Amino acid sequence: MEKLISKLTEKYVLFTASFAIRLALVAYGDYQDRTMAVKFTDIDYHVFTDAARFITKGESPYNRSTYRYTPLLAWMLTPNIYLNMVFGKILFIVCDVLSGLLIYRILCLRGLSSESARRICSLWLLNPLPMGVSSRGNAESILASLVLGTLLCMEGRRLMWAAMLYGLSVHMKIYPITYALPIVLTLRTPGITAGDDNQVWRWRKFIRFCGGFLNRELFLFASVAGGVFCILTSFFYYMYGWEFLHETYLYHLTRRDIRHNFSPYFYMLYLTADSRWSQWLGLAAFLPQVILLLVASWAFHRDLAFCCFLHTAIFVSFNKVCTSQYFLWYLCLLPLVIPHLSLSIKQGVGLLLLWFAGQGIWLCPAYFLEFEGYNTFLLIWLAGLLFLIINCFILIQVISHYKPTHTPKRPKVE
Image (cartoon, rainbow, N blue to C red):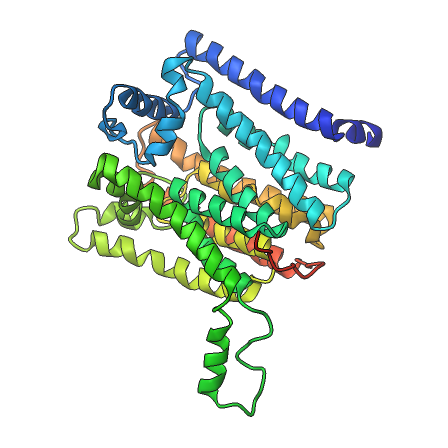
């Protein structure tokens, strides 16, 4: 068995097999779409393709209702119209395998041997969830590769490239903006803290602490990342106007999804959908996220990969809308954390089974609501609360068993 695992995790075997499996799933999906009533392709893929079709006609991608993404994604998928409908899926599975390669490179930079790094990144490359999501035509793998690319460049001390990739990732989807604070704290000049000298007046301590943020590295990162984001945003605003800003960014801030999902807030938003307080309640739902993200940033910013994992898990768990595809946002970062966990295999498997059990409990009332027509909203909400408790318990276990093994080096300026 050990010999088989070693063979499967050889570098070229692992990445070739991972890509081949995803390619086979794409081919099977095409067959299922043509021959069966239940379709394999994600509905979002048709939304992307329709938006790309409008672009090829010289029109706005937002002419396609429910397209709420950057126009850049629709532009990237115009070969779906010019070449073949399967182009976008190929792009997504390439980004999926690329994410595995980036995980491998980051793990090597963090001190793991090549063999250990391959075994860990196989947890992503051979994972059925990202395989299924990317081969069904979901674009989350693009963002995963951008986020992992940012972390690789930060780990490899390539600050300029890290800033460019980070600005692009925030443009593609707004949630990586939460990484800004831990990145800023990471780039702060070390050795200037609020408690270095008890004899110095508090206001002078505060000034010295703030002075730590005035350095070349932080200025460069903010300038480049902000520049990339602003250039792309300005260009698409010029092309598509206010509709672009609203559908790509503002909609997600004010979004109140009353359909059933894993979020602990969905039932409250469902019951208050017609209330004049509904929008304010939706905005208030961000408060627990903000508090927890601030605490996590300050406590764990010295290990940027771990901090970003915590940020994403907290953001997803406490978000107003939470669906299965959101789990990929933090699952792509989990392999960077696993080597530093002191959990036994038994404990790790137990937490994994607990996580799946929470989803299974939620899916039971969700099935009866969606397919049988029973009013199970209350049960879905209670199951969502249980899943939130499970996620919090797992995060507590991860934090308490995390043992960082090195102090990250400061990124260099190219």
